[in-house]
Length: 611
Image (tube, rainbow, N blue to C red; front, side):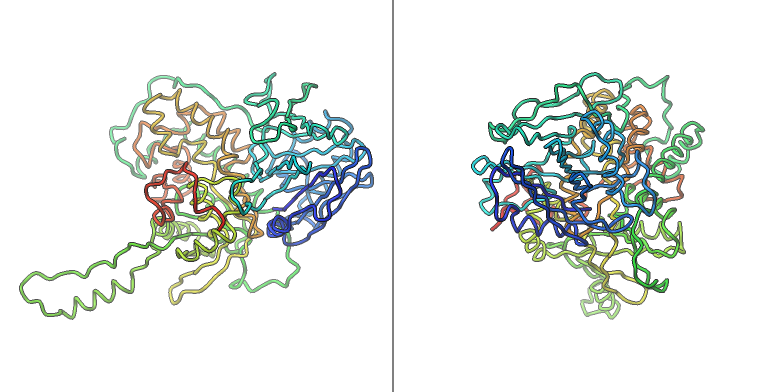
């Protein structure tokens, strides 16, 4: 995770980068900061580049990284495939080496099409007087843009502060439709040339807006390049078949949800083979995301004091359980794994009442007094649904590998701290998004990723703060495997055809709906969000399957949605977590209960307005 920024101005600026933006960027990249300014005489403009590095791979490499020809690379990403990056190499250096050999737009498109992994980049080609920028196919890394027409300033940045008036913000997320080329020799109109993503064998880009984009000045336009060059999608298109082969026989106990139901489905050889293929491709995606970590220059700690390098956003639900179980395969045995579990204080919770004895004797019974005292001691206002399922999931993981040290971190948030940090930090990170849903999820993610809480062992409660730089998150599972309740509604109203269309839409909008925001939120702690379910090979495998192999929404809730993943959980040896129905983070953590119950998720959230 890095913070990158570029400011293009037709005039020389004394302070081209707002101090608030610089601080946001430095939070993302605490290990190294550097600024470089370039001046171009024809046309007369200045280019200011600012980069802040979070050291994740190979040797610490300051950015912007410049080659002998004066080209500059600002890279916020991870190369997990497509280019060969040794375990001791830095992928920024490897990528710049390849960019140095780019001679044409065709070369650039070919190179970027090879990359697998999350990325956002800004690349200045000095001799060509142009800037390339963009995000990966899914938009897993944040990149924002803004054009100030009054001052003729164009800015690209990983993160930006919300303006004090909350109204006149021009920040937008750069749509991950492709990569953009900005010709600095034609600054009169600020025209961006788009090289869009297309699926293999397609001849035309889909869902690309031409000409002026909403929210931008009339002097700014985005046009699809006239040369017909496209980037090749790193994933295969979704299988849209809607006719299952033959009649699917339903188990007579299909109305029940039990581990035995899932084991019965696994008795089918073809189904079991498919499940193991999913486990293999997902396991490899996780392996790549937990191995590429820098070796600290500190003396080794005793095993019982070792710190985790990897954390999992953990609710005890099936998505996070599988991430933890597969991470266990690839993380050294002596290393703990941090399980981040967030809960917001239940404001209207009541202490469980003492039991009442039958009869007319109203005198205090010693047993009643003891029971009431016990209830008061055991009652916890942070025992939200995700905390309860998280503890159960922890026990399943301990059963799976008793030798591993699993740090179940109870992140407890009061309403007072929530209000304080929302105004101080979170509202700026969520921006330019601003709905009630963005508020709920953004706040829950920010506190969870901070990783400051308590670990309860047998004897005492210990304060603990996770130092893991890698945070695994389960986003992408529901979008691909029909995990949301709206998928079940669509299936009931429109059948498999409607469900397929819904899943295509889900994956297409996941960047603007989730990923940019989540990247900004988690990155604020100097940590890197990694999304194994959105690994290109995982998505391609799931896209290759017909929808009825991934989910069967004729089966009850807790079984039919994400069916393939539930079968994988049983195959991995997990227990009742395989049957937990989907529970959104804002409800599982109870943050949604703290606010106005009459709000809609899509409403503009007034709490995100700065005071």
